[in-house]
Length: 314
Image (cartoon, rainbow, N blue to C red; front, side, top):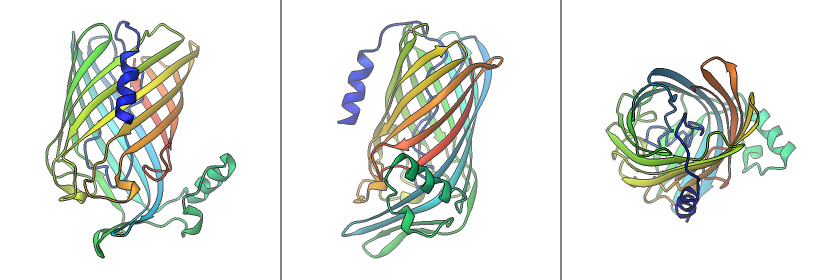
Protein backbone atom coordinates (compact mmCIF):
# COMPACT_ATOMS: atom_id res chain seq x y z
CA UNK A 1 0.00 0.00 0.00
CA UNK A 2 2.76 2.47 0.94
CA UNK A 3 4.65 1.86 -2.30
CA UNK A 4 1.47 2.39 -4.37
CA UNK A 5 0.73 5.74 -2.69
CA UNK A 6 4.29 6.98 -3.19
CA UNK A 7 4.29 5.89 -6.84
CA UNK A 8 1.09 7.87 -7.41
CA UNK A 9 2.69 10.94 -5.82
CA UNK A 10 5.67 10.74 -8.20
CA UNK A 11 3.37 10.88 -11.23
CA UNK A 12 1.93 14.18 -10.02
CA UNK A 13 5.24 16.04 -9.76
CA UNK A 14 5.66 18.88 -12.30
CA UNK A 15 8.23 18.84 -15.07
CA UNK A 16 11.41 20.92 -14.57
CA UNK A 17 15.10 20.97 -15.36
CA UNK A 18 17.16 18.57 -13.28
CA UNK A 19 19.70 20.20 -10.99
CA UNK A 20 21.20 18.99 -7.73
CA UNK A 21 18.93 16.40 -6.10
CA UNK A 22 16.76 18.26 -3.56
CA UNK A 23 16.23 15.31 -1.22
CA UNK A 24 18.13 14.08 1.82
CA UNK A 25 20.57 11.14 1.42
CA UNK A 26 18.82 9.02 4.05
CA UNK A 27 18.05 5.33 4.63
CA UNK A 28 16.68 3.18 7.44
CA UNK A 29 19.36 3.23 10.17
CA UNK A 30 18.11 0.03 11.86
CA UNK A 31 21.40 -1.49 13.13
CA UNK A 32 20.30 -5.01 12.14
CA UNK A 33 19.79 -3.86 8.53
CA UNK A 34 22.86 -1.65 8.09
CA UNK A 35 24.71 -4.35 6.12
CA UNK A 36 22.07 -4.51 3.37
CA UNK A 37 21.58 -2.25 0.36
CA UNK A 38 18.83 0.26 1.14
CA UNK A 39 20.18 2.97 -1.16
CA UNK A 40 20.67 6.52 0.05
CA UNK A 41 20.14 8.83 -2.92
CA UNK A 42 23.46 10.05 -4.42
CA UNK A 43 23.70 13.86 -4.44
CA UNK A 44 25.71 15.45 -7.28
CA UNK A 45 25.92 19.06 -8.50
CA UNK A 46 24.49 20.30 -11.78
CA UNK A 47 27.93 21.21 -13.15
CA UNK A 48 30.17 18.58 -14.78
CA UNK A 49 33.17 17.26 -12.92
CA UNK A 50 34.08 15.65 -9.62
CA UNK A 51 32.44 16.36 -6.27
CA UNK A 52 32.58 15.10 -2.71
CA UNK A 53 30.15 14.98 0.18
CA UNK A 54 29.59 13.49 3.62
CA UNK A 55 26.64 12.64 5.87
CA UNK A 56 26.75 11.92 9.60
CA UNK A 57 23.97 9.96 11.32
CA UNK A 58 23.72 9.42 15.09
CA UNK A 59 20.96 6.93 15.89
CA UNK A 60 19.66 5.86 19.27
CA UNK A 61 17.51 2.72 19.11
CA UNK A 62 15.45 0.85 21.66
CA UNK A 63 13.01 -1.71 20.28
CA UNK A 64 11.55 -4.65 22.19
CA UNK A 65 9.00 -6.99 20.63
CA UNK A 66 7.81 -10.56 21.11
CA UNK A 67 5.52 -12.94 19.20
CA UNK A 68 4.60 -16.58 19.72
CA UNK A 69 7.81 -17.72 17.95
CA UNK A 70 10.21 -14.79 18.11
CA UNK A 71 11.70 -12.23 20.48
CA UNK A 72 13.56 -9.09 19.39
CA UNK A 73 15.61 -6.60 21.38
CA UNK A 74 17.54 -3.73 19.79
CA UNK A 75 19.26 -1.51 22.36
CA UNK A 76 22.22 0.29 20.82
CA UNK A 77 23.60 3.65 19.80
CA UNK A 78 24.92 3.81 16.25
CA UNK A 79 27.05 6.36 14.42
CA UNK A 80 27.35 6.18 10.64
CA UNK A 81 29.52 8.46 8.49
CA UNK A 82 28.80 8.14 4.76
CA UNK A 83 31.61 9.46 2.53
CA UNK A 84 30.64 10.09 -1.12
CA UNK A 85 32.65 10.80 -4.26
CA UNK A 86 30.69 11.75 -7.39
CA UNK A 87 31.26 12.50 -11.07
CA UNK A 88 28.91 14.11 -13.61
CA UNK A 89 29.67 13.84 -17.34
CA UNK A 90 26.85 15.21 -19.47
CA UNK A 91 23.79 12.99 -18.89
CA UNK A 92 25.83 10.37 -17.02
CA UNK A 93 26.35 10.34 -13.26
CA UNK A 94 28.66 8.20 -11.15
CA UNK A 95 28.87 7.81 -7.38
CA UNK A 96 30.93 5.87 -4.85
CA UNK A 97 29.93 5.81 -1.18
CA UNK A 98 31.63 4.18 1.80
CA UNK A 99 30.08 4.08 5.30
CA UNK A 100 32.13 4.09 8.50
CA UNK A 101 30.00 2.57 11.27
CA UNK A 102 30.27 2.43 15.05
CA UNK A 103 27.86 0.43 17.26
CA UNK A 104 28.22 1.02 21.00
CA UNK A 105 26.34 1.36 24.28
CA UNK A 106 24.09 4.42 24.35
CA UNK A 107 25.07 7.82 25.68
CA UNK A 108 21.85 9.60 24.64
CA UNK A 109 19.23 7.41 26.34
CA UNK A 110 18.29 10.04 28.94
CA UNK A 111 18.07 12.75 26.25
CA UNK A 112 15.75 10.57 24.14
CA UNK A 113 13.51 9.86 27.13
CA UNK A 114 13.20 13.59 27.79
CA UNK A 115 12.64 14.28 24.06
CA UNK A 116 9.71 11.82 23.93
CA UNK A 117 8.26 13.21 27.16
CA UNK A 118 8.48 16.81 25.89
CA UNK A 119 6.68 16.04 22.62
CA UNK A 120 4.27 13.52 24.13
CA UNK A 121 5.67 10.65 22.05
CA UNK A 122 5.37 7.00 23.16
CA UNK A 123 8.45 5.55 24.90
CA UNK A 124 7.93 2.04 23.49
CA UNK A 125 9.25 0.44 26.70
CA UNK A 126 12.43 2.52 26.73
CA UNK A 127 11.57 4.00 30.13
CA UNK A 128 11.42 0.47 31.63
CA UNK A 129 14.86 -0.62 30.36
CA UNK A 130 18.36 -0.04 31.80
CA UNK A 131 20.02 3.09 30.43
CA UNK A 132 23.09 3.14 28.18
CA UNK A 133 23.50 -0.56 27.41
CA UNK A 134 24.26 -2.48 24.19
CA UNK A 135 22.30 -5.61 23.33
CA UNK A 136 21.10 -6.95 19.98
CA UNK A 137 18.99 -10.09 20.33
CA UNK A 138 16.78 -12.02 17.90
CA UNK A 139 15.43 -15.30 19.22
CA UNK A 140 13.57 -17.72 16.90
CA UNK A 141 11.81 -20.77 18.38
CA UNK A 142 13.92 -20.52 21.53
CA UNK A 143 17.24 -20.32 19.65
CA UNK A 144 19.35 -17.14 19.66
CA UNK A 145 19.70 -16.24 15.99
CA UNK A 146 21.45 -12.96 16.93
CA UNK A 147 23.01 -12.20 20.31
CA UNK A 148 25.51 -9.31 20.35
CA UNK A 149 26.50 -7.37 23.46
CA UNK A 150 29.89 -5.98 22.36
CA UNK A 151 30.82 -2.85 20.38
CA UNK A 152 31.28 -3.41 16.64
CA UNK A 153 32.95 -0.78 14.46
CA UNK A 154 34.51 -0.54 11.02
CA UNK A 155 33.78 0.16 7.35
CA UNK A 156 30.54 -1.06 5.83
CA UNK A 157 29.96 -2.21 2.26
CA UNK A 158 31.14 0.00 -0.61
CA UNK A 159 28.29 1.27 -2.83
CA UNK A 160 28.99 2.04 -6.51
CA UNK A 161 26.22 3.66 -8.56
CA UNK A 162 25.72 4.90 -12.12
CA UNK A 163 22.85 7.17 -13.18
CA UNK A 164 21.48 8.46 -16.46
CA UNK A 165 19.26 11.48 -17.09
CA UNK A 166 16.12 10.28 -18.87
CA UNK A 167 14.74 13.76 -19.58
CA UNK A 168 14.81 17.22 -18.03
CA UNK A 169 13.29 16.09 -14.74
CA UNK A 170 14.04 12.41 -14.09
CA UNK A 171 16.93 9.97 -13.74
CA UNK A 172 17.44 6.20 -13.66
CA UNK A 173 20.03 4.73 -11.28
CA UNK A 174 21.71 1.33 -10.88
CA UNK A 175 23.77 0.56 -7.77
CA UNK A 176 25.96 -2.32 -6.63
CA UNK A 177 27.18 -2.85 -3.07
CA UNK A 178 30.41 -4.80 -2.62
CA UNK A 179 31.26 -6.78 0.56
CA UNK A 180 33.94 -4.56 2.07
CA UNK A 181 32.51 -4.71 5.61
CA UNK A 182 34.55 -6.51 8.25
CA UNK A 183 31.71 -8.00 10.34
CA UNK A 184 28.30 -9.61 9.61
CA UNK A 185 26.71 -6.69 11.49
CA UNK A 186 28.22 -4.32 8.90
CA UNK A 187 27.99 -6.34 5.67
CA UNK A 188 25.73 -8.66 3.68
CA UNK A 189 28.95 -10.57 2.83
CA UNK A 190 28.00 -10.62 -0.85
CA UNK A 191 26.98 -8.40 -3.77
CA UNK A 192 23.69 -6.47 -3.47
CA UNK A 193 22.02 -4.70 -6.42
CA UNK A 194 19.41 -1.93 -6.67
CA UNK A 195 17.59 -0.14 -9.49
CA UNK A 196 15.51 3.01 -9.02
CA UNK A 197 13.90 5.94 -10.80
CA UNK A 198 13.78 9.41 -9.32
CA UNK A 199 11.96 12.58 -10.32
CA UNK A 200 11.87 16.14 -9.06
CA UNK A 201 9.79 19.28 -9.53
CA UNK A 202 10.63 22.86 -10.46
CA UNK A 203 13.82 23.91 -8.67
CA UNK A 204 12.89 27.60 -8.87
CA UNK A 205 9.48 27.15 -7.21
CA UNK A 206 8.92 28.13 -3.58
CA UNK A 207 7.72 24.58 -2.90
CA UNK A 208 9.48 21.78 -4.77
CA UNK A 209 8.35 18.16 -4.77
CA UNK A 210 10.53 15.12 -5.40
CA UNK A 211 10.48 11.35 -5.07
CA UNK A 212 11.98 8.02 -6.03
CA UNK A 213 10.89 4.39 -6.32
CA UNK A 214 13.11 1.31 -6.68
CA UNK A 215 13.84 -2.37 -6.14
CA UNK A 216 16.73 -3.80 -4.11
CA UNK A 217 18.06 -7.35 -4.62
CA UNK A 218 20.21 -8.54 -1.74
CA UNK A 219 22.63 -11.38 -1.11
CA UNK A 220 21.51 -14.04 1.37
CA UNK A 221 24.23 -13.40 3.93
CA UNK A 222 25.13 -11.27 6.91
CA UNK A 223 23.20 -11.27 10.17
CA UNK A 224 19.91 -12.42 8.64
CA UNK A 225 21.27 -15.17 6.39
CA UNK A 226 18.56 -17.72 5.62
CA UNK A 227 15.80 -15.33 6.75
CA UNK A 228 15.84 -12.71 3.97
CA UNK A 229 13.50 -11.48 1.31
CA UNK A 230 15.89 -11.44 -1.64
CA UNK A 231 14.04 -8.48 -3.16
CA UNK A 232 12.11 -5.57 -1.65
CA UNK A 233 10.74 -2.18 -2.76
CA UNK A 234 12.00 1.12 -1.40
CA UNK A 235 10.72 4.67 -1.95
CA UNK A 236 11.21 8.29 -0.97
CA UNK A 237 9.00 11.37 -1.35
CA UNK A 238 9.40 14.90 -0.04
CA UNK A 239 8.90 18.64 -0.22
CA UNK A 240 11.47 21.44 -0.09
CA UNK A 241 10.18 24.86 0.98
CA UNK A 242 12.31 27.96 0.29
CA UNK A 243 11.76 30.49 3.09
CA UNK A 244 14.61 32.73 1.95
CA UNK A 245 17.57 32.20 -0.44
CA UNK A 246 19.62 31.28 2.64
CA UNK A 247 17.20 28.98 4.51
CA UNK A 248 14.99 26.13 3.29
CA UNK A 249 12.73 23.67 5.08
CA UNK A 250 12.60 19.95 4.28
CA UNK A 251 9.90 17.35 4.90
CA UNK A 252 10.50 13.83 3.61
CA UNK A 253 9.27 10.25 4.06
CA UNK A 254 11.39 7.12 3.44
CA UNK A 255 9.87 3.64 3.13
CA UNK A 256 10.93 0.10 2.34
CA UNK A 257 9.24 -3.29 2.24
CA UNK A 258 9.95 -6.24 4.58
CA UNK A 259 13.59 -7.40 4.48
CA UNK A 260 13.23 -10.49 6.70
CA UNK A 261 10.94 -13.02 5.03
CA UNK A 262 9.73 -14.97 8.06
CA UNK A 263 9.81 -12.40 10.83
CA UNK A 264 6.82 -11.84 13.10
CA UNK A 265 8.38 -8.88 14.95
CA UNK A 266 7.99 -5.25 13.85
CA UNK A 267 11.68 -4.32 13.89
CA UNK A 268 12.41 -6.59 10.89
CA UNK A 269 9.26 -5.68 8.97
CA UNK A 270 8.50 -2.84 6.53
CA UNK A 271 9.51 0.66 7.60
CA UNK A 272 8.16 4.21 7.24
CA UNK A 273 10.18 7.16 8.58
CA UNK A 274 9.77 10.93 8.50
CA UNK A 275 12.67 13.33 7.98
CA UNK A 276 12.41 16.92 9.22
CA UNK A 277 15.15 19.46 8.57
CA UNK A 278 16.62 22.79 7.60
CA UNK A 279 18.90 23.50 4.64
CA UNK A 280 21.49 26.27 4.41
CA UNK A 281 22.46 26.53 0.71
CA UNK A 282 24.70 29.59 1.05
CA UNK A 283 26.57 28.92 4.29
CA UNK A 284 29.53 27.17 2.58
CA UNK A 285 30.54 28.11 -0.96
CA UNK A 286 29.80 25.30 -3.42
CA UNK A 287 28.01 23.19 -0.80
CA UNK A 288 24.76 23.03 1.09
CA UNK A 289 24.47 22.08 4.75
CA UNK A 290 21.45 20.06 5.89
CA UNK A 291 20.58 19.68 9.58
CA UNK A 292 17.74 17.24 10.24
CA UNK A 293 16.32 14.43 12.34
CA UNK A 294 14.16 11.40 11.63
CA UNK A 295 11.27 9.89 13.56
CA UNK A 296 9.66 6.49 13.20
CA UNK A 297 6.21 7.17 11.69
CA UNK A 298 5.31 3.49 12.00
CA UNK A 299 6.17 2.84 15.67
CA UNK A 300 8.47 -0.08 16.32
CA UNK A 301 9.46 -0.56 12.67
CA UNK A 302 12.58 1.66 12.63
CA UNK A 303 14.88 3.44 15.10
CA UNK A 304 13.26 5.94 17.48
CA UNK A 305 15.32 8.89 16.32
CA UNK A 306 18.33 9.82 14.21
CA UNK A 307 20.16 13.16 14.36
CA UNK A 308 21.91 14.03 11.08
CA UNK A 309 24.18 16.45 9.23
CA UNK A 310 24.86 16.36 5.49
CA UNK A 311 27.31 18.37 3.41
CA UNK A 312 26.43 18.03 -0.29
CA UNK A 313 27.63 19.73 -3.50
CA UNK A 314 25.33 22.20 -5.29
